[in-house]
Image 1: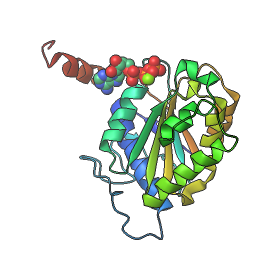
Image 2: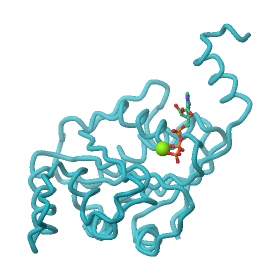
Image 3: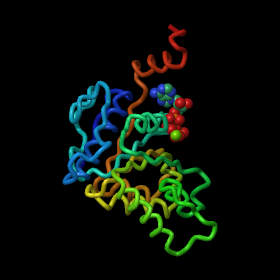
Length: 222
Ligand SMILES: Nc1ncnc2c1ncn2[C@@H]1O[C@H](COP(=O)(O)OP(=O)(O)OP(=O)(O)O)[C@@H](O)[C@H]1O
Ligand SMILES: [Mg+2]
């Protein structure tokens, strides 16, 4: 069973996420010396392991292929994904599932992979999506970020499961977020796949709140 970090504060999540992606992409690209663009420099984060404030529990495994942040609405998942994306120097593709998207097969995966989704879907559309990913990986490692996985259409979840199943050998890493509800069988299956870690976000602690108030008010509230 994979161990996951136990966060002492929310501010530790982004450095831990960046470190996990960095480690996984490096491992996936092993054998390819000096892959450009994957040396992620995070100020104050002295490499891996050892993200300050995080109980060293990252998977530490070369087979890590995905991390999914799980927390209720308003917990800060989207904010954290954006912050992590800004810090990564690996190319990042981002898409968010929408509540109405469940009725639109492949909508999320097409958006994520930058493929036009025709009104009439060809029978081999799934292959076209995987081909787009192959082309992307041929250019170098890529991080796929998917927000609001609880709304994902079933076909896109199947594509994401395929991507995760490529394992640590492919230079692709999935970062997702989801609310614990509504339950989705396919999403539960994705989370149970080998190489996937689910990170439950910690609650806002006093330090986070202080920083948040400072960010929002510019210190005026002090
Ligand atoms: N660290 C932070 N600093 C400043 N604002 C934050 C921070 N974390 C969250 N917020 C703000 O709190 C609100 C809720 O955060 P966010 O939208 O990321 O939650 P969420 O978990 O994605 O919710 P949902 O499941 O509804 O999409 C947003 O307005 C966001 O900008
Ligand atoms: Mg959100």
